[in-house]
Length: 459
Ligand SMILES: O=c1[nH]c(=O)c2nc[nH]c2[nH]1
Image (cartoon, rainbow, N blue to C red; front, side, top):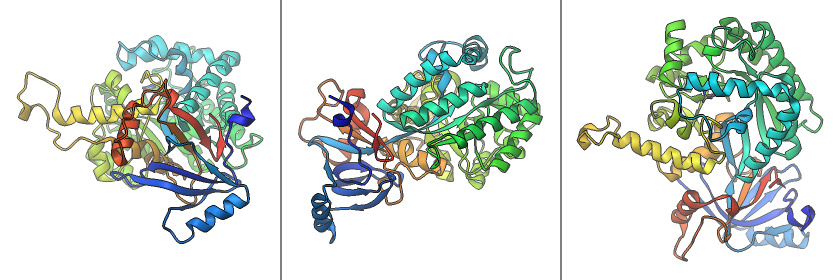
């Protein structure tokens, strides 16, 4: 089959589809035979349900104009997934080196690997594979850490645009000789700022990127890798360029303790001093946030990328997700490739539910149940996880994605519930939330039949 036959371009079309979205955390909205009108730019114009006055007329008119598309029976539409934390270069070590603490892992495995991206041929090979795999796994919006290299960071942005992924790409800033090896760091605080500025300029000037499908992000790696001068310069740059910021925050006892010892305050408080806590910005992990830190994030409209799978290896704790949500902190989910040895948001969702259940119950079987945990009510369920992986991620980034609503980009997945090689098995009784639950817990890559970003099929 040729690409033209196989691909279903929905720009300028009206789609008849049934599916789920979770615009509000905790509740699932089932769309049955809804008409989703999509404009030539891939934005949703209207969502009309059977029974609404204009439904039949709109369907007839779209049909008459040859602009009506229908998904095959057994197909369920979901919003595309938003992955809020990916280290693109670390795809080349996915599934390895997870048996040592964060500070050892960085120096033994991760910095030597990332240094290899001075070689743009190597970078291109890994990045093409990664972006294609993530799209095939349903990640329509990706927030990437690249490496400290300008050329390879530019290349990652080029590849995202070429492949059609909605992406935010940051050149990693890391200049502190006390925290970074000689062979892999920016030469000075000024070099951190200027190289970041160069990548911002490249991304904003990329031909074909006028509508900002790919966006730049100011990316100080984390406080232990940056001098105060670089942190200040990057905060100023983010303000001057109107860029989002991403970094790591209070991930492990070691990382959290480093900042307490060096700055006499938490990561969140310290990042804020440098102008690095901003609306649309994302702090990865944030396991050790205090109640005051959470209030600060709410005030600054900065979000957390909760990475439950990675946290099991490197954080030594479970992020208090429910407490953060109840305080009003914006939260989305991340795979944290390769701290998390997974490249699918399905596993991030499953991990988020599982981690929250363990936080609630506690884990030490030597303790009686009533003493095993101090976190009653910490659990989330699949409804919350689905929201966080879609609309929650969009809200964190302040991007109109993750929902089937007018004004949102049509970034979506068609789930083929009958794919023989896929994990989903239905028995004819599943409906409503139960059907969604089955999909989220059992879907695998063969079930992801089509992927659209901005109405164009990209996978
Ligand atoms: O999970 C992580 N992955 C990284 O690459 C990293 N760098 C700093 N802190 C980090 N945490």
